[in-house]
Length: 418
Image 1 (cartoon, rainbow, N blue to C red):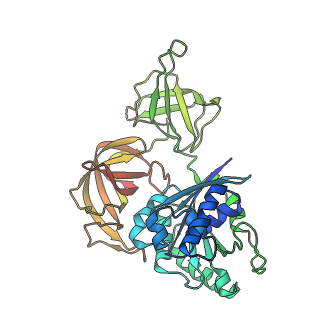
Image 2 (tube, one colour; image 1 turned 30 degrees about the horizontal axis):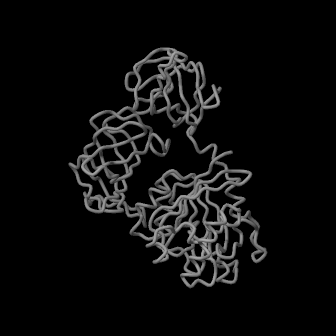
Image 3 (spheres, rainbow, N blue to C red; image 1 turned 60 degrees about the vertical axis):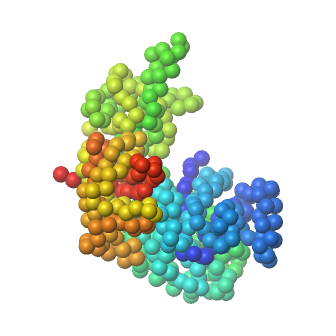
């Protein structure tokens, strides 16, 4: 079945964790022992009801404070689709965790408290979702039961968000009135809001089209591992394992290997179940070539007439995630992009982005914790990439502090530099 990754976003106490708990509970995805533990925890906290938010708020500090701090991942499936949920924190202090959780999502759920309306953090998360290239947004106006399921309240918030969203680069936005606590319009249509004619949230998640979100035009295959069994039965087997990052690969296709530039043809494409006729994103496969070429981890197999940018200098948007350091011109770090790793120098910090207005401040030359800015980078070895807006896999990277091995930033490549 097709897999949909989605992230919950929004301000503190908008009901993100409760919504996920409701989805899991109503779709019968919670085991009995987990349910028993949640019931006991709710009773110990003095809650008058089973607190569904405790299903994802697993850290002790989260349960004590009633907020989400870390990203919690949950998995469930329906007969139509499999899902991976990232429950991201709403507090501004943990914006970096929201970036991490939403970076691989096909879809973002923006929750808005019907009583509070659109808050600053609601806008911030929507803007970050747009920057991350998430193609689908679902604006869930939550806690409708606390405003008497008022249609005018929902439509006012919908219209206000639609006006704000005009400056976002998101092509698909849906609006659903819900009550995560009561279950209205979450898994089943609600009888309390007969004026709403759209689908329940789960039905929308099952039916939203994501197959065309992948880049199917540019063949990209970063090599992760070279398979050489060296056994008597497979003495001549040489395969290149990895995940397809773009395009369509078929046996017989002419391909080029970067950085060498050598060309060959695909002999076969293998998976655990055997040879297949075609590989598309995000399939994990092993590619065999007709020629015995020198290929190793970090190389990329591409279309013979369709190559990515090959460059050592580029411009990118970066979210700084380190608490005890700052990103300044001259900073030296390690960079990992697809399966390729090398070192990088920060040539300059061009500007800092105001995530509330999308305005850029060109007077800033330093990025601090949770700040997003535009930078110019130079690597010691060339990278093979496409602009992030074209391919989220080949256009993204992380920066690593070599002294601590901590990931200190996540980045999105905009363009190569001359």
